[in-house]
Image 1 (cartoon, rainbow, N blue to C red):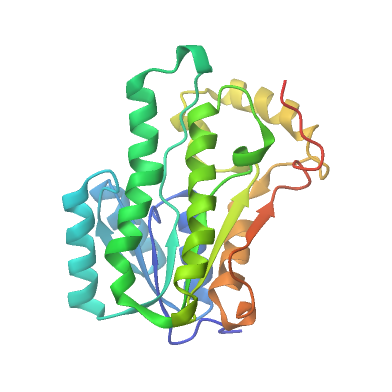
Image 2 (cartoon, rainbow, N blue to C red):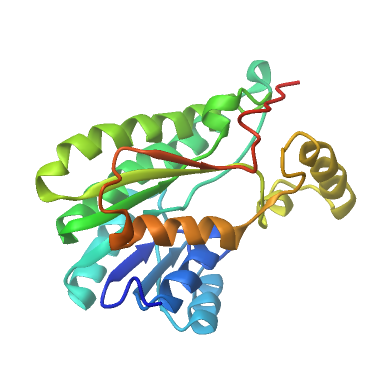
Length: 251
């Protein structure tokens, strides 16, 4: 069913993981899809595989954000859906968290997201949908995630303000907060396959459904929030975590 037919969607960080899966689901539902990413080769490969439009853009650089908005305006004129998915996930104990650790996460996950949306907002049609990819880490109190969880909590707070500010344009603003999802993020953290398997086994026991989520499951939720099937939902945080939040373990 083409629930996104004739809609144009931009997905930041769409060359892998949840962003890639969402691009595929959006396209399968009839959307004209734009993905972004920092790595030129990765963006081109993903765009070719998916049959979508790809732009190289670094969310951590203001100049790059401005160029992205200008390119999308020149090539498409307007968009109907903005999925702010790009971000970084780095972890460290509070007492060992450096200024560099803090600045890297906040620059990309908060400042970059804030100004990417600010730059793209004039292109968003009235009645459109803004979706932030946040995290259950904003509320579960996971150790070593102080800066990361703070960055995601900041975006959840921002989303509620924007839901109010943009309501006069009938623009819906919502968050998706995934729990553990099988994506390349764990390799990016420097964990080997054995470490990932061990971590997954321990954490899966704390999830009511006893498994990690799949990127495609998050993508289906994003497609719902992007579609006209969710026109009475705004200012919401949609948790998709297999029951982790109701059975949290912080040690």
